[in-house]
Length: 259
Image 1 (tube, rainbow, N blue to C red):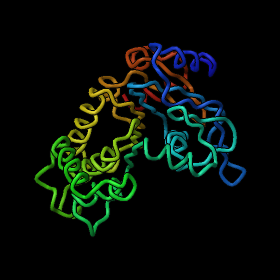
Image 2: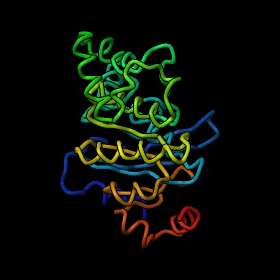
Image 3: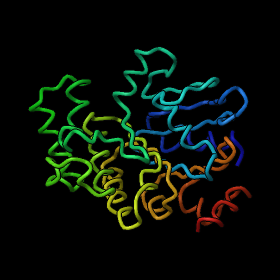
């Protein structure tokens, strides 16, 4: 599939409202490493898009451009109708609407679970402490760790900490959730509990872009799977077609290594 064909697939997906539009995005590091080479992708409201690819393919860098954690030098990105430029006001607005969960949990070790989850709503959304705590307790129950609310991150398992990180992102009531290999730092027995939370979130209709190598999750939950390699979007298809009948040789090589 060519880059143009891939764009056409995403642009017409179910006729849904586009939430993320990335067009010909290019990025260099230190003016010599071309990490993104004209990547285009459209993500529609309520879609779950899984981004896969070998290490160094640019997939994490790409999704981090969606909330300006990474800058880009050429192309255009629009998030929920807002053009993502160097305008700090636009960046702040987009970051309020886009939650992100990283490989590392990035929790504040000196704050309790409840305090970690309520911090951003209180300081950014300007919620009262009571409102933020009520919302946080609902979310902690939703991700299955309500009983851990008064503990500190160091008292939790890795899987529990990652579920706190998900609750923290959801506390801002985002319209879009980005996941950057959220299970890669977890022991194998803890991976399932985090993926279960993500499955529930996907079924609720949340717009999600997930960088992951979890094939079972992609098969079950994704509306589309995207393969990136060498800074390019190589192939894009529905999960059954992507895993069972990949069109590109680069996709076939990648899948032969992970399946």
